[in-house]
Length: 328
Image 1: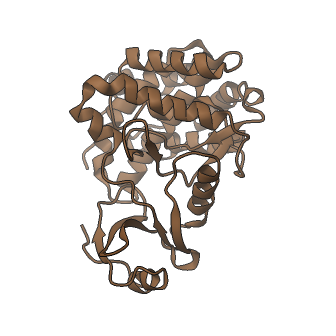
Image 2: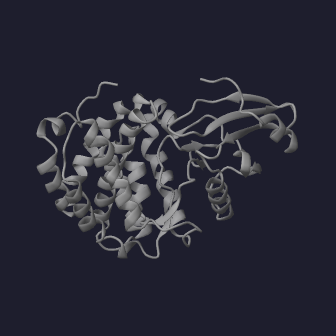
Image 3: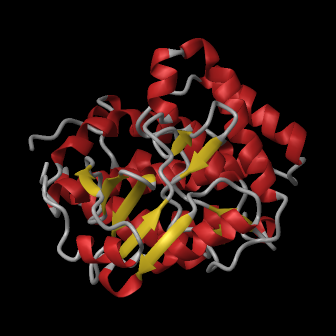
């Protein structure tokens, strides 16, 4: 890990009233964003996000954080910002992520996931936020990551036009049911939920890509987690918990499967792209989990056109191996 702070950080902190603070780098993830813990002898701790242009843009994060906070949800408070240089100083939620908390206390799994579902229920009761629409063009752009990255990496010559047509058939059916829509955080899972102040005080992270879309999407993100096993029993219980509280409309189970398959196909493509384009092969180890979730979603009748495409284009040995093995 690069132990140096970004150029201009000390000046930004001084202008924000945090001169003399220590800057401690934190591990990165899949993007160009970097995070630093800021420790000040009088002001306490904060987090510094550096989302440098042109690769990153902090404005969507700032807009979403302020909207969430204004509507009673637990996004980090923003103390200072400098959009042009990509600096944002924000509230420190600490180190207790939902993922690690449950690794140590698996007996609390249902209660913690129940609180996470309650957060989505509260979010979905709000009018949609000031974000772009999660429309058919965006859904289809994301599904193409599978044929653009995964299939070539496996040496597969597939029917790309048929892939698009199958998804058109599957996704067009849910568009009317996602209007007027809810705010979709898009990466709502156990590594982006902080237990800030206790299990029922869950803080939100990584919402800069928020859109207005279908209420099932963030449920898929949480309950079909690429990074953590969620048992089918827990998934079913949490879906029942959501349905009881939110009373979603017709064919919610079908739409959940549609968006599950859409998201999981996208993630498989993204993980291969992170390896091929960005030199981050560690995400390849997560593909078998995501592939297993994708296969489960494909078994739902709502996914019949996409399931037929898989039968015709993806060899059975690759499917049986959870997407196959890669040599990085």
